[in-house]
Amino acid sequence: MTGPTALLALVLTLAPLSAGAQLPDTLPRQTPDTLPRQVPAGPGDLVAKVAGVCRVQIAPAYRYLGGQRFILQEAADAEQHFYARADTSGKILQLYWFQVESKLPGQGAGYNYGRDSAITINDIPFAVSLREARGDADPPPGSDGAAMMDFVKAAGLTFPPMGRPLRIVHTAKPGARQELMVIYLESKAMAKADPTFDGVFKRGKRALRFVACH
Image (cartoon, rainbow, N blue to C red):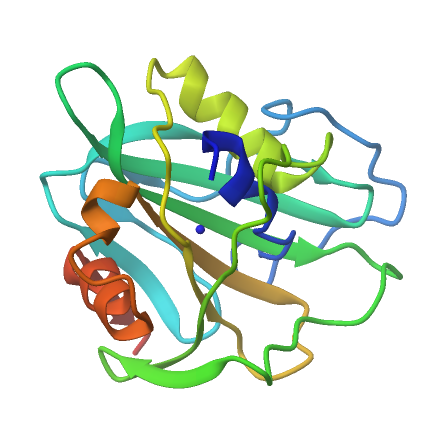
């Protein structure tokens, strides 16, 4: 998916690259936005070829902020893209954080979300969970949450008090080493209408259409 910084601290580092990408064992550590982006993205469209998902269509009300790719904590290749709705002062109303991530060779186990709810969206299986906020803690330095927050702030937007983030993840199967992660974030003012899982999930999926690979 607080003090603005709080809620993003909770989103764990998890996500992939484009399907079938091979990464060398010797890939050096990089800082955000120093690797060429591999996921085509722009207004209303993200071509995330991960397992059964070929692309994601995003409602035109959301402005595309851009993206960045980097090595995440020396363990994964992570590419992030952001789409947002904001008020006239630049405060975020709703934000989609897409992350395509691949574990580097020899770096830990694959992705497994067995504790999350298994939900089908547009005939594609996802693991979905409503995350908990972590007080007023900042995202840990070097985390994907910190990279996300830095990028969004650099795009000129600010985080008001935020509701609980919704995490939506697609992988080929439990233990796969690639994933597509979508974090839906919304202001507390928007969340107030219905802060339950069902309410946040309904709002979070409303602006998205996942297109399956055929």
